[in-house]
Length: 428
Image (cartoon, rainbow, N blue to C red; front, side, top):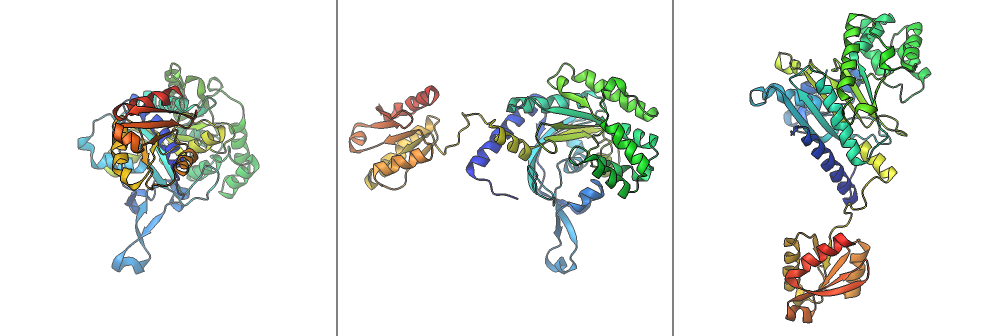
């Protein structure tokens, strides 16, 4: 869990703004949920591995001594969404599309791009089993990453039922399926031998483990793949349809079917997706279909599918690659109003107000220090303009504006100074 200094916050808000605009262009609506959920809402939704990473909140007051937990910090945004849909079903449309950008918490081991508190940028559709939903989600996240400047990402696509079909074909006991998929999901992060050992440690026969890894690492495309049983065949046809529907979108050329993609969360029921870029262990985001999750709260099935982008990982990669636009404001203000003496402070405040009304970000230097010191401060903070308001300017109703970028200055009527500074900002 980290502190965010001003530059960090500006970069984060820039990325969030881009993602929100793309999500809203697809008709998704905003939603927010509390940071804290009842612990029974979260437990049992993520599998044994996920349960271990939930931050539990101990009972308080007279129950504190019990050492028991009744609340927890949210682990993701999907389970809270399922609860919201179940609780507010009467107020929501039958086909409900929402996006949610908020922090989540996991008691995980920190690593590059992996933190215990981090933001997820979720986009979900509820109410339809059509593969159009998966195709649109892939297109939306592809548009968002493209708008941020990514051009080398790949959307890996697989299907949980196809994985089940494969595990059955390789004689992996059904009671070991969930555990095996947790191990397989690490193939893009650790060596195959380590994954094989973990599979065996989890109870999978050595020959089955070896065959499983061999199949998942073999080069393939969808045309060379078939289902291993009837359910697997239907999953295969579902993947085919998703690829057909994304062909005319920004996601079309980025999708790759990858049998090694497992997605460790236990609530996935159908197609699963993950976005990867070069030189990053792990993904920028992922998701899939979870048609049974809302039913755990509602008592009736509601089909649903979602995709989550990891904001922190996006920020890490963009920072390392120098992808933030040079026009992104990293300074606290466009102009600083300098103060010559205490008597000039009321005039400085009025000029600052005039400049703000013109649409500028304005900082008033609070102390009547030497003008050179004030200008040096503005320059050190990257503030491009300084408004000088001496006795002559106050008497004449003018203000002298110093451009620190080109080291020039001009005197303007106070009412016209804002427009002149904005024009110079655009020109420079």
